[in-house]
Length: 164
Image 1: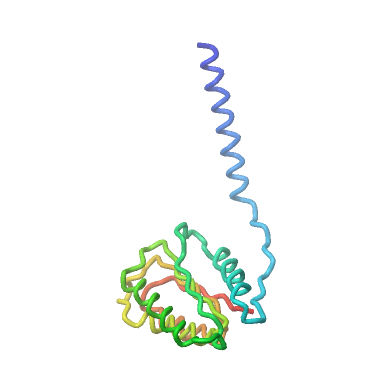
Image 2: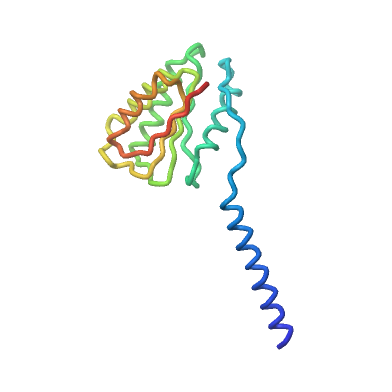
């Protein structure tokens, strides 16, 4: 019986220490992350790494894998075909319904065309139907306001990150 009490005491002490460590970790300031710089080229691999890191830093409370939409540079052969396929994919995803707690992340070296794609994808979304969904747009500041205005009625939480 004495060894059982000792085990309970040790377990209780271990849980107390773990709880204190958790509280300390929660109150500590997160480490400052180095600022990100968007690629200066149209290299898809470089853009992929950059966009992945921006998405990771902006997940917040999102625990599900985000829906990622990447459009290559306009100089890419068959760019219009790429644009149409991505628009179709985004339209289908959104038409099926995105549940609260999910993220849609859009990024491209062709910021204006990506903005066009986002706006077109949200044209038929019912007002307030996407509460709790986060939409991340990584692009140029010149495209931010028109995307923000197009998404306002949907109820999404809109986050813009300037690709600089």
